Length: 319
Ligand code: SF4
Image (tube, rainbow, N blue to C red; front, side, top):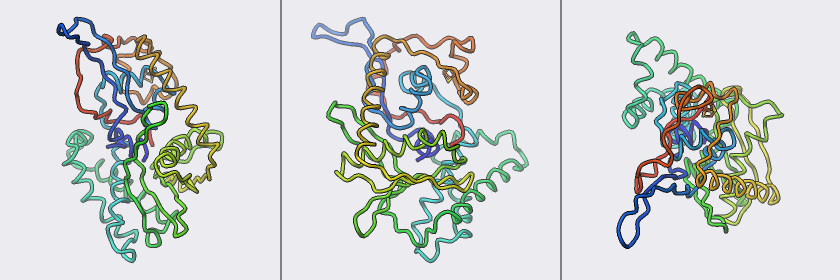
């Protein structure tokens, strides 16, 4: 799912998350007046990408759980994903572009009900002009999908599949896969929709990281290496595919373990370094970021143990 999926509802934030929290230790004699940070217990592709992009951003999202404003791009991603998922409820012959476009208004209503904060996006649009344009853009993205895939010839084995696997090290990997196709031969294809544009070839590896992450989870869960990873870019009308081999996934596992060690060290030391890049322009947390004259919240945080595992509700940048 794209950070629009994973992040926006999940795409807005991956559903279940890489939990992280700070709490108070206690002893048999009673609570101890010392706060310690509790290491996050799992990792998702979006949060792994956050840490690689900027450790301080990871802290703000996973440890501090700072709220993030919904964005038009991420919310449109969530809406488009919902439409593509729901279309498979219809019989194959009815999975047409007009049918898919017709689902957009109803899915927007559902999204507003489940995440009322998204209505903030259009509070300054009394005549509904911007909303109409935004919905039109969502319809165009949905329509473009039909130039890339033919849903009348697909019968997904899974849609919006939550997956979780524990590595031997104890690290739990989790995420939500947009679509899983299984061929009669048993070969598995993992598909992810992106409402943004395809990256330039030199950045394709970064785009494939999320897919290899999912492939590793599926491999660990089902003991089957997915035959194909497929990214469908609705923004530019491109499809990026990759056929992984076990060595690819072993490399990703080593990378994730190294990342996890770095996250644990930062959690223990409290050193979450900002790493400014042009993506800071998409960051909701500049007011707390030293790179922009801000001050992070105290660390570790006051107790928020046993809080829900809900993660950040936004994703940075277009998906
Ligand atoms: S503004 Fe940039 S450097 Fe600061 S937390 Fe956000 S992404 Fe990191």
